[in-house]
Image 1 (cartoon, rainbow, N blue to C red):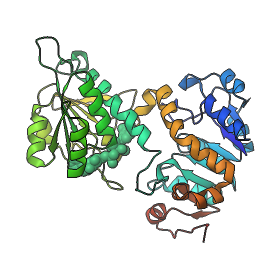
Image 2: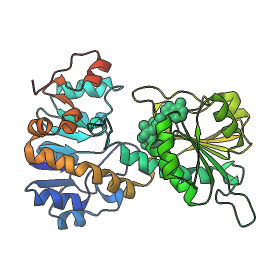
Image 3: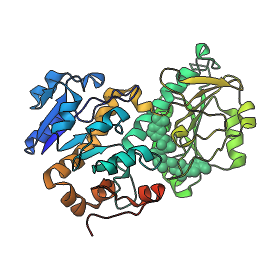
Length: 368
Ligand SMILES: NC(=O)c1ccc[n+]([C@@H]2O[C@H](COP(=O)([O-])OP(=O)(O)OC[C@H]3O[C@@H](n4cnc5c(N)ncnc54)[C@H](O)[C@@H]3O)[C@@H](O)[C@H]2O)c1
């Protein structure tokens, strides 16, 4: 199969869908790879590294899209890329089609075989191609929060690690899933006083075993949340209710009663955010201050560290891309149900039931 890697063009996006090592792996499997010139630069990979790995570097996006049997991307196609989409082409990338009628219609009209990273699903319901970005964002949250707490950012001037003879900062992580656990690990690693909250007792039990001595686990309810948030220097929002808007757990009046100069890093903002006071921000203007509290609500935090994020993402995506390339899409989806769940559109029809429901269309399975 000919695998194509175009340069990502979404604002602030510097990741790339395949590393040079990934290109070498494709070659070992007997596939050819074409990479748009400069596609890896934002993640620290030169054209030369791709060439040395056996890929062909081509000048334009049009050439990648025009020639490749399977286009590997990071973000969903942008409107200026729609003209490149063509019948039968396999597109493997983050798609997030449910809220995006325009893109869904383009993929249907142009009869693209579109596989979404976010809907690749294992037997236990977990989403292996979403997890790496939650891991990266969770870890980044403490970096971002530390910066928010600095005096020049409007914060209360607290160093999370404390200093000899001085108390550390108090970090409250709301939501003990993948991102929450990773935020917790970094915060406890630098010596902060960490509390992690969740509503799922078995998850709390698991976290308590894992983080014994490094963090306090607390069952989240209105009373405990209020108590913890009012004492916090830094609140990290990592709640997810699958398929739904994040519940607004922090009211504006609770935020107003937080310590002056405290900070909220609301990762859940991509699903609406945990605080009534949160609104999406960008890497260019990541923070705003409301009720004296510094808010950081960037919706695509992993783009801040494209080198690490590219490795983390491609470590997870490569084996699926290779399986699709080796077996062909339909056979791969039949043999490996995780890939089957990933198929969102095929030959002008919606395949994934949740996307079909969001579009008020009927789902069609290519395997029936
Ligand atoms: N902003 C970014 O750049 C970025 C990057 C990656 C992930 N995210 C977002 O971070 C969020 C968390 O992702 P994840 O992969 O860790 O999800 P996850 O499903 O692993 O964890 C979510 C946790 O929230 C808990 N929860 C649900 N309701 C709760 C409540 N009322 N109170 C406390 N906890 C509650 C669940 O029990 C679960 O443990 C998602 O919204 C995800 O989209 C954002």
